[in-house]
Length: 471
Ligand code: G6P
Image (cartoon, rainbow, N blue to C red):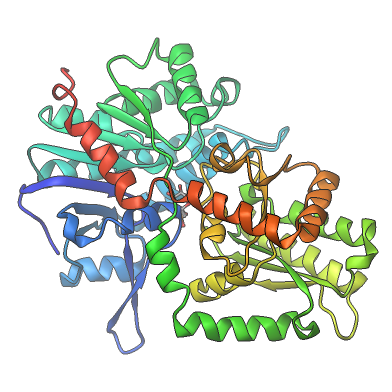
């Protein structure tokens, strides 16, 4: 779809959209659904909501789709030049802002803010401006615009200048950095990021913890949050979708295949994890904790399998490629150290397959969700909903989901390998009745705010404000 010609009453803006295109060998275009927490959350809104979703053309296929005028109803892809997008997305969003909010820098070598960083920052501004202009063009008088995530921090301020009549919201799907970590950014960049976001009438975060961190940064570096309202909306799992989707034949097929891989004629327990291969997800320490379990409790050898799905993510960045290699290396090492002819301790899959993820959720005895820091973590919320017979949840206290699920999860410090190994053991030995009872309570908490309501809640809050922020 090209443009609404300025008729859209509700607009959503995000870097990644609900669909992306690939050029096939015969020159035709193949559409593929987008992935990640943001897209799964927003996709539930569906085309019926009448919202226009403005996103970026990410691949050559996407840019080709725009050129040919191919697209979905309710989606407008902005054909941002590939080099500008690469600088903004890989350089600033994923190598700087993501690292700042997830506390991922490894001093003394990082971070470095040099001339290259400044060049990339200029692209980040250009990229944000392209969104602000696209939105300004599409939005009807007084429309509500919901801007998503750290890729688009400058959009609210830029859009406010172009269209003071709009109601502008911004939602962060990530954590927010503590003051001392945010302070690592150059002073002018800190200010531009905060002022960009404070151009919104309303800012949303996944937990009170991240909202408070943002407010603290504003108090330190921008005087205050000014007239902008700050709200918390804890995105939940979509129970109806997940329950229906996880009982389709393709999931049943994958369950049978997984049982084969696990072996042991159905007597083996499974510890499941499903993540993007993402530094903050802490997959390597998860594997080390599993290795520790096999040392501390040799009785589990041959009786448990760690099913780990680590799907490719942000592979343009060397640090992500290296991390993937490290995940593979540690898994192989565990298999070589402890494996026997009839038992592979770690079953690792690196190709994305949603049906297989659901199959693993259904089979899991224990789910391991141990990020060093995570905005929410939807896997922690999806597993209890889908689980067939109840699943113990080992959950990091640094995931946003911790605040909603802590009572019935086995909570761990994600850096503590021994504690994580103990929690895995506790999960494996939990009595079936207790496990089922906890799973039920976890599922209730996990689905308290389904995606469609999560979105509507924010839209209504924005529309209920007395009026667009006076400039
Ligand atoms: C996180 C971010 C999203 C992003 C997703 C997948 O959930 O908050 O904005 O879409 O990761 O990452 P990617 O870089 O593939 O879009």
